[in-house]
Image (spheres, rainbow, N blue to C red):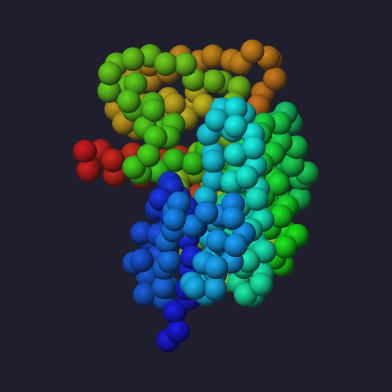
Length: 282
């Protein structure tokens, strides 16, 4: 049986690392994983890598995702998040290769308090969101065999995320601020990885939102984490932002519901299982 060759770009990053590990456990795939050794901002380097690797699918996990860093380094942010995606899309199209582009809920401004689906118009108001949207647009324009995945409030093993930040405060008995007016849905990284692996073999293209069902504020998330981990929920101090407006980057998985290819769980289901596993291992 012929294996599907999957090139994981940005394999040293958070999702890339998890995806590489999961793919390597599946005998249906031949995995090529690269980090900085292939400069995705250099079209010649990307085209050369494609000619050597001959992938059937490229999964682009490479990104500069620190929003503050992006604001201070606009050129670098667009170079990696937009031009890198452009180069991968162009090179993949030239060899009839499917590309899966990881994006973000930050392509939406959060100004409107309703769940955004894949047919709503993105209006990013940060350099990070703008650069990721530019990358999405390049992928759409240059390779018809594309899948763009947006997610929200991602957490998972082996990296600093909101869950680990809350637990770090709790372990020290420190109180911390948690916003009551920031709304979205926390999504387990391994759930995203599972969706990607499924979609590698599916003849499905376009933009998909991959976020857990339901919604919560940062404060609700923090108190849930504390309660599940056995800490005092009063450590989370509810605060609101500088304005009275709610900022919501809640995503509606409409394409999933239309196609029936996958179903995301309620956010608290994965979170409870994740923290229970952490306690077991700890």
